[in-house]
Length: 137
Image (spheres, rainbow, N blue to C red):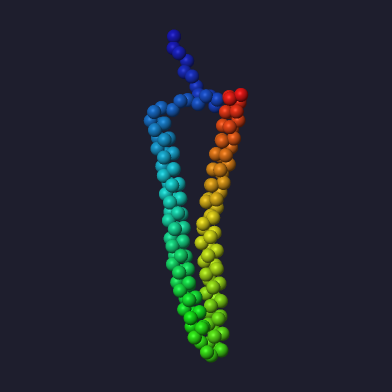
């Protein structure tokens, strides 16, 4: 007598063959590699921008020193007014760059990831403490 074949049901899907499992693993691995490469490209881009901002900040800092020295030597009021306006402009640019650098330091993934790790591991510590207290009596 022939055995009836079992049909897969929505509750119990048919088990995957080794080849299908391996293909699924490869697809998942490919997806993860693609995501990792995209994240790496973002990190490189941020790193390049931070490097450019730091170089610009150093150049502007040097310019502030030169303008201040010129301002100290200037005798003509028109030249002094021009130098003071330039000094204000350069200091405003420095403030913008400092703000950009600080915002990158505290980027959305930076503090957010640290926060959730603290919550996760802090919670695990509390649970472990309660379990030890229950076990110790």
